[in-house]
Amino acid sequence: MQIDFVIAWVDGNDPKHKEKMAPYLNPRLIKSDDVAGPTRFRSVGEIYYCVASVIRFAPFIRKIFIVTDNQNPNLDYFIQNNFPENQIPIEIIDHKVIFRDYEDYLPVFNSRAIETCIYRIPDLSENYIYMNDDTFLIRPVHESDFFVDDKIVSYGSWRNILLDRLLWLIKPLKNGRKPVGFKDGMIMGARKYGKKWKYFHLDHLPHPLKKSVIADYFSKNQSHFISNISHKFRSGKQFNTHEIYYLSMHDAEKAILKPSKEHLLYIKPVKRGKNYLNRKLNLFETNKNLIFCCMGSLDLATDDDRKRLLDWLGNVINVKF
Image (cartoon, rainbow, N blue to C red):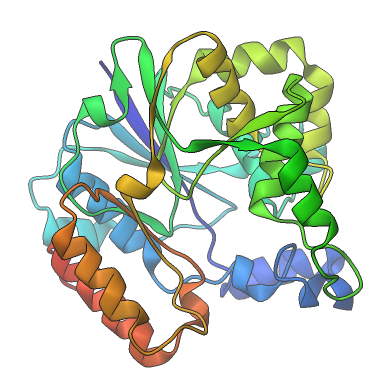
């Protein structure tokens, strides 16, 4: 089985990227971390660890694609220095490539719009794995951790739409509006798909995807595709493309359900107690089933916590800078 890895990446510290985004920003958007706040785009070097973790722990991968907006993480020296015998090609894919024929919607600064177009990468294999650059492999993985024959391994859980919408209604306003959450995109996707009562809750981990399934859905629902790529920044009107994909795979009985919490080490080191990092890193040592890690909002961590986490991650993946 040929399997590719796709990683979405942006360097929000790049002056050219800031200049490109500036005409579309306003004070309200800048204050909204869920939509266009600086934390959505900042990079603290996660892409190096992300790519290195794939090379180190998933040697069966055919090719790594990095999707960017006219940027380049310049990984060549780092990869050559740490993996001199690496045989996995790394290809940079610009937004213009995946938005071909829809360039009028560019530029976009919106992961939901970008994820809608990922399946359009030229030469992308039928079976591929997608994740953001703040997600990492932290132990050796195998094809069977993602694909088993014609089925996928579906990491997540089922949740009640009505209950979570009620929780959204009582959520306090922030900057005069309801925040656009990760969960909201899943619920919108489930509704687009036709589900009324339940949705599949995804987590921040690698997603095993099949190109033909997503392509088939959008070929039959072109208006959904257009509406999802038409927002410059994240919007409550958008849906999570992968939600629709997972629902489709489950309905076709081609998904093997596994609980995310048994395999994902999720770390968000922002406004936590003193022992938070100790507990998380000890969990990695005691639970050998943890193969994925996501470090959310690492740019907002204290300098000491960020250094500790990146040093730990570098030791786990065994890379040097």
